[in-house]
Amino acid sequence: MSKRAKIYMTIVWVVLAIYVLGILYITLFGSRSSGVIFMLNLKPFRTIGLYMRWLFDGNRSNNYIPIVNLGVNIIMLMPMGYFLPELFDALEDFIPYALVCFAFVMIIEVVQFFTRLGSCDVDDVLLNMLGAVIGYILCRFIHIFVADLKQKKTEK
Image (tube, rainbow, N blue to C red):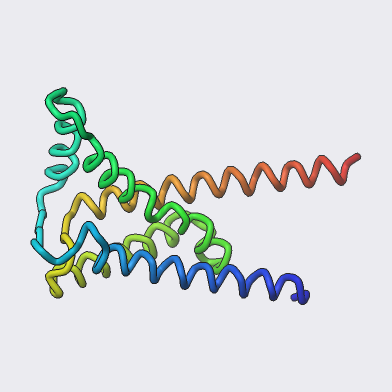
């Protein structure tokens, strides 16, 4: 591995570590999980349905809460689509990638359940996994696009 590649990989590892610590902070100690009230939802789509009704019922002037909660849960795992396949060759395939993301999300939810920090919500798992899948697909498309550009450049 070249010196440049080693530096790149070191940077990716450091950014991943900061990203994971950020996720842990947000999910366990962040503003949405201030510890005031512990919430538990084991019924799929209960929270998602509540937020969707809140968005579309037309009676609320501030849709900030549902948009942020839905959006953050989706966006939160999107970067894994870059980090995991970039750092681990075995996670370039979708199934192993998805299993690692699922395990990561489940660990967070179990910690939330046992520590009573944040909210242990099956809908968080669904939204996080949606984000992980979107991130994976986006990064795979970008990877294919860049490889295609490089190939076209070398053919000229």
